[in-house]
Amino acid sequence: MIATLNLPWKEAIGPECQLYIADDLPLALLGGEDDAALGPRLEVAMTTLYASELFFDLLSGEGDYSPEDLDDHYAVMERRSEEARTLMHAWAQEASPALGSPLLSADRDTVRWDLPQLSVALRVTQEDKELPVEVQLILTPPADDRLGPTV
Image (cartoon, rainbow, N blue to C red):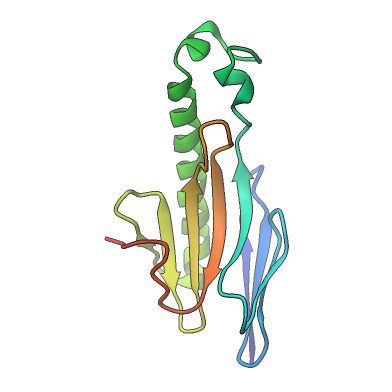
């Protein structure tokens, strides 16, 4: 049996993603920045659904930022993080009819669905202060807790 979950997130910058889940085939994720497959040997599939700008210019005092933004670059990064969280929660709400109610992490930066076939998560992350704030879609085996505890 193959189940197809269409996640037609309609935000202006949001992608359309499709999850293909089969009993005897790898799981495939189509859409976002990269296509990915989760098979017997691959334990995590991840794609970026949204990324803010890089912050190199902001941190060096350059770029298209107001003087206030250049004085307080952490406030700019926090605004981008809030924008990413807003997108993540909107996408989670749109995915809920297909995936059910998500679990929310204690820090509110991850929502997760534990399905029989796999775990699906949306996560807001920033790898380093110069790098963009991202919303990632992550697929892991069922009941995988690498994304942290939920409330």
